[in-house]
Length: 73
Image (cartoon, rainbow, N blue to C red; front, side, top):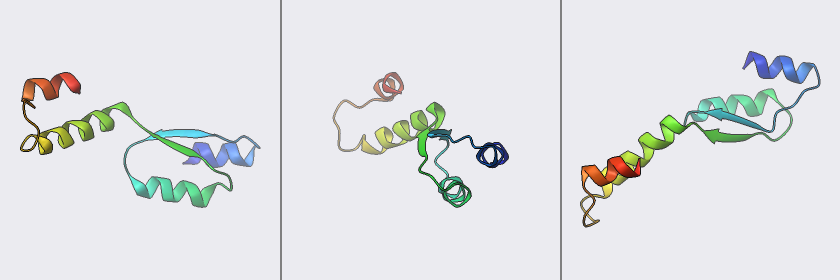
């Protein structure tokens, strides 16, 4: 957060930031800067979320084995 506020004070703006799925961070950034900034999810959180959703779908999707899920992740 400090990097972003220091950059804004120096006239630098960011178009994108990479973070986890924490909505508190996104909310805080919107209060710190007066421009739109896009959030990208980091690869670790994206892979974990995908795996969780695939494991949840196993009961309804035929052939969705742990080996297939691991490959998709």
